[in-house]
Length: 155
Image (tube, rainbow, N blue to C red; front, side):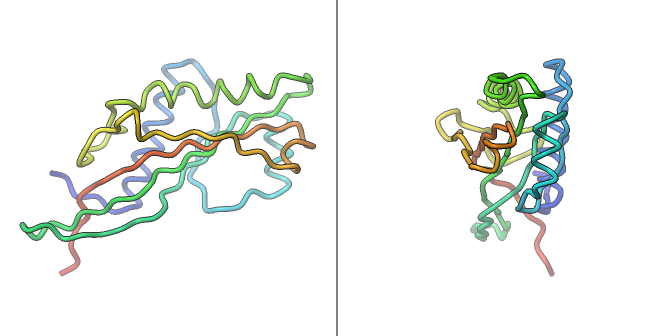
């Protein structure tokens, strides 16, 4: 089994997401994300971008009886899309960003040698309503799923 650091898992999920969008014929700006969106970010998404931001949260570690260090956490993807100046289109636009990932997740390992494939019942999606997003004509969704991987031991 391949050992991964959390950074390598994040990078792998980012690469996997980019492949999903490429296969779906969607041009989506995919990047890793550290936490907060600025007002300038939101204005940019509202006017001309479809965006996917990826994070890994809630990491927990356990040592198996064989001495392997297993990390588990939640992959968190925030997808954002604006109305591009056409009222009423942001809901459809954000679905175009969320759908390729949601369709590809069940039974996937996100292109990595994770401990388990993603079980469809563990994938969660929620509308990310925010007044600032709404006034800027931007819609957002959060998609989460558990990941479990072997982490290198520090010796």
